[in-house]
Length: 249
Image (cartoon, rainbow, N blue to C red; front, top):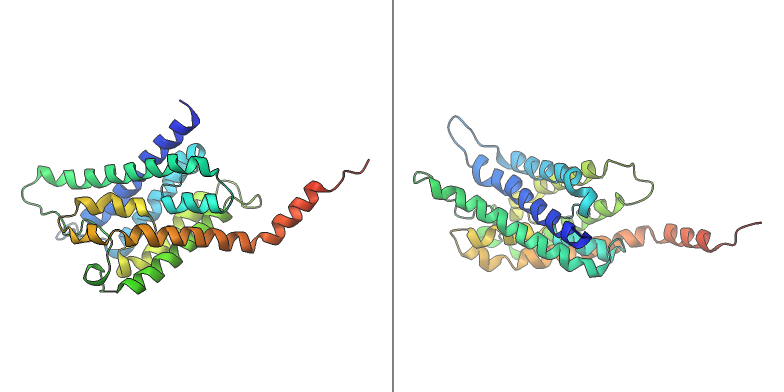
């Protein structure tokens, strides 16, 4: 299997697992009652963070474990990925997200006693925001927190970053991001996660709002990469000068 096929498959499977792990917790465990209880915001945030953490070590050596179109865009803007490979990542991520969302909805087909949640863990603003936040608030949160995620991910590619700890850093960051923003937008910061579940939600209004969770995370991804480059511009210049300096003989 060539490199592009391996990347495509890793991102497809990885994004599906992220949606199943994170959104699945929101759809099933967070809504549980009675003897099972509900895991709440903390539980859902933890599920997303853990999903990314384990994926980083499962497929990181294959594709870098982007599982998020905004991360892929950030890697391109940050100079860490050849732009020619971006479509391979994006197609795998979108298909993986849809596969994960379809599976979450399909599970309900086997039970007549359990209703499909109205939003199926979809993102939203206005009346579809968990606390009723408007579009401007959601835009600010999604752009800002996606930028944070990209800055952390890019930081893990630095030569001085401790080897083997990238998954922990990325997973903890996604955990924190969900703790902050689930009440605002149900947390996207990932277009593939948003597009993966919205088409399968019983309430079609979530699909009508999904555009916001494609646009804002991508803006945040590019912004985070630009901030990272700005913060590290002098160091890159020093490394370039060292590389171009004549070797003493």
